[in-house]
Image (tube, rainbow over all chains, first blue to last red; front, side, top):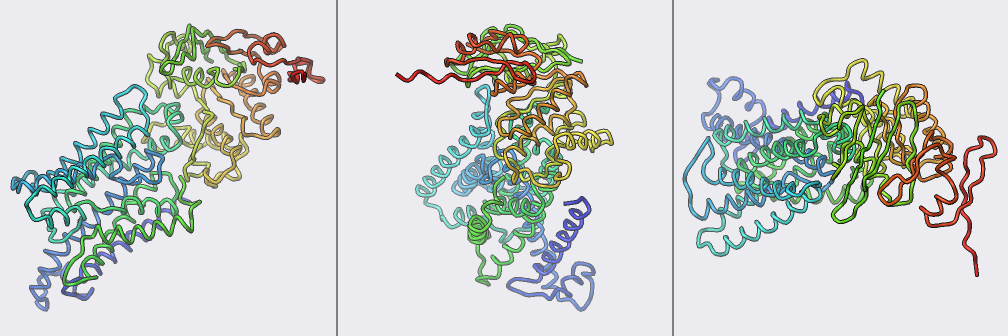
Length: 339
Length: 262
């Protein structure tokens, strides 16, 4: 694919995302027509608008949809990076233990009824953020401890710790006399009730981490050719892996803090992007991020409307749709999913 | 033009001593063939030479400087390795994969310069992949993938070229073509080439000197006619062989002798 064609498709996707977000602003328990949405965004003092609609669009939905787009973009970029780093098509943003750590952190915060806050995060997301970082740091230090480490060790350590941590989470939930509903719906992930403060708390980490991953695209390309090749091209393996894991984990932890654990977006968006744009990461990372944003905004629309006026946790929507889509891809285009 | 020397090199995996005080000298303008049975340590030696595996003892000297005293990127500007196991290939175009060979020169963030582009174009042409440069690597045959790897190391424009069985998946035509390219790089451009090979007859044809590995050491080194003797080969490979002479080039020609059926 030529650079020109790639740029064209990316620009089209940006417009698609913008259009979807615009429509999404009008969708929900109260529906607002797209024309009115545009007026509310551009000219909120227009006397023909109802204050209720202005509040719904500007205060409630805009922040939530922007957060969904950002989290989708971040998870997809992190997924693309981990798939490249591990040369494994099954890798996702949680592959090195971030989800288990986040779940444990959040569960502890919910069960103990913690109320402290820091840097724009309240207790539960902050505990999830710290839990994710701590779990990945532990996995990474174990995997890189013995001399000549390999990505397989990292992968196995991540899987083992994730299982261990999720068992601890289940144990805590069983032993707790608190309402399990909060913990459970947090573990499913969702954007219900998210506001501007949530967006501002997560956004810097997701944006900086994703840009860092994009800057690391060439080292990622080299790593997908194998460790030997990457090293013979002069790439310091340990340091590069460390920086990559750190950047991807920062993005993942901030995404989880913003919305709970949302599965499948970080697995599917990179695969779809790779089918269209190929595996060279300077294209794959931005393309995955865009597709991830589109997917998660759409999934959130479904989560808000499918059982309205109630809401589903968006993690359920992504897991069901994502699972079906992924199985379909495996069945019909198995040969394309490799690499 | 750079000499590559291994001085008393030792390397062990866990409790398997692969290299044991190995000595090797590779010179500019010459193709040095590494031969020896499976598992004798040819790949390990090449990985040690290319600063991927750190030796337990001894040194690898590139132009008389210990490779472990320089940062990996400086070494990568001068020395390239084409690994044997290339494994699962990404959904990248041939051109993108070959362009990665420029990484040590351009850094990990810089765009391609005209010189980079010229090097990539030349490398693609040399391995006969220019026409198909937009195809993706993961859908190529084993032999084509091997040519992509060779294209990448050529794009790296090294002074020292380390090749780990670069022709193991190639048919006779491409074997000759690739080995011909390698020989030309050594003889015309003065590169130092170290190449591990299974096919002793190809080794005899294309290498200027051979090093025969056995029990962690080089037990014979020199022109093919001196190294490829029936006595030495039978000892190292553990099977009887007969060595005759190539009808056209006069190089040694090694053939197995069937065991006596009794």
